Length: 470
Image 1 (cartoon, one colour):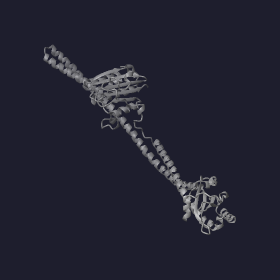
Image 2 (cartoon, helix red, strand yellow; image 1 turned 180 degrees about the vertical axis):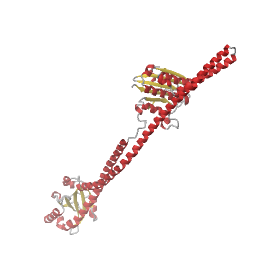
Image 3 (spheres, one colour; image 1 turned 30 degrees about the horizontal axis):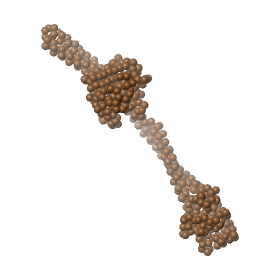
């Protein structure tokens, strides 16, 4: 089988791994966000300030919309009140019966009153209507005498003494001469001639009054809102900064403690391995030689039964020595620093062989030689954890270990025919004491390597570690 075949999906002949099981990337380019990021107070404060800016923008937009509606309502009310006062105290006393009958003298007198006492920068147009829709007076002479149908609200205003106000529809034909003023507010109410005939008095005010009122309301609203938010930020930022500094220090302390725990574990494993190697292993080796020599002496002196027993005892001692040496490799691999990665991986597979697990080892010496010491430690650690899982949890009978080159990377693949598992719950919510998968992920991610997994319940397990060249 070529390396290109191994690098594809799980469709090759690795034990127990069917073709339909896809690769799951645990670390690498697509999973860089998995490790927990340290809290940076500056970044969090910037995010908080950005959030406050978004809130300010939202408040500004909402406040402007609300201010506009309130200002329009108030401006309409003010215009209605002003028109009502003008109608009572200026227009009503100036109306004569001759105004309705198109008497030029009455029309001139009424026009003089309107231009002197009514028209201003805040009131730009005046109309006086009959119930039939004829304009009997306007400060725009071209409208006088023209007839336009009155709307239902206009007729309702004539039938009941009430003031009505609305934004003027400048597209209506009777308003064509007001289009040059821009948007206008239209207010109308009934007035009466001395003979009792009802007329509709109508005024037009510039909509800029609404805009001015909106600005006044918004300045008052925005001043209070923005100053309150700025005071809140000024009070919140120092407290938030202190809290984030504490969280950051706590994270740093936790990382230091974790690193110390890892270092202490490695030192303890090295100490235990050294004690076993220099003590019990050496003593058992000496005992083995002594018993083997005694067995030869017994055989030479004509004591076959004693020789057989001594030979059996020597074999048991040698078996114990092999078990202890396997345990030493499992605890701390001296061959990794002394002989290199290939012998260390060979020692790991011999540990499995001692447990009656068939191992198939394929090592590319050139691939191992290209790795730096730190990368060799990474490969060895990943291999050790994967083989432990295969021996302890997977009930595997066959394990395949391969180290080879592929492109600009060294690849370690470990496959077994064990029970497999569902990686989703193990990654998302591991049980107490079952953090091995997450530890492997973090180790590979910290080293900049890609770690992939292909497994499913009953489908075996396959690991792939891709270590890029330095």
